[in-house]
Length: 229
Image (cartoon, rainbow, N blue to C red; front, side, top):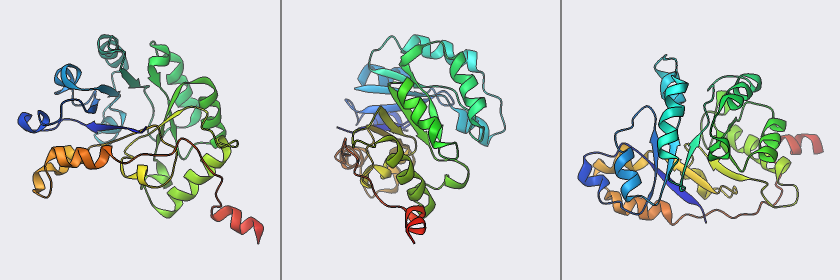
């Protein structure tokens, strides 16, 4: 089963109230709906807000984030994205992991521009690992994104089984593409419910029905084909 975390805020409030029993992503950058989501949702993912801070040129307050998480992690169905540096290197992000105070209630982020060996190590050490599209792989679904993701899955899923719970950040649409994600998130409902094409409930039904396989069958990607030639 693939869990779909619907990004908040979802406004106005009556629209959010169409979605009891769903799973939600609440960002530290926009905490508006965190109480409602814990009272009415099935599960909650606490995003660290690093991407929003990066786009606005702000320095995140990580101690404040840790304290916020401490309260909501009392819910056993809630987990958090461990702080990360969006365009940082492996050393910077490993340093932030060491500062994380809530153990396995958090998930580290592997950025796709980082070495795949780091993803393999994180999967060995953590029950849940997030994948972030970054740098030259920032466009989810682009050709080079697929090549990189295939290379990563071929490396960590050699037996066909996935070594950890993989969560694809900004990856709701990626659940369609054959990768073994256990969960995904997107702000699609929050951004697009007002266009009149579908209600928020219809949008959630459509997304939640998309499921990923828990297995991976090795695939060729462009680099393989070039090597074979």
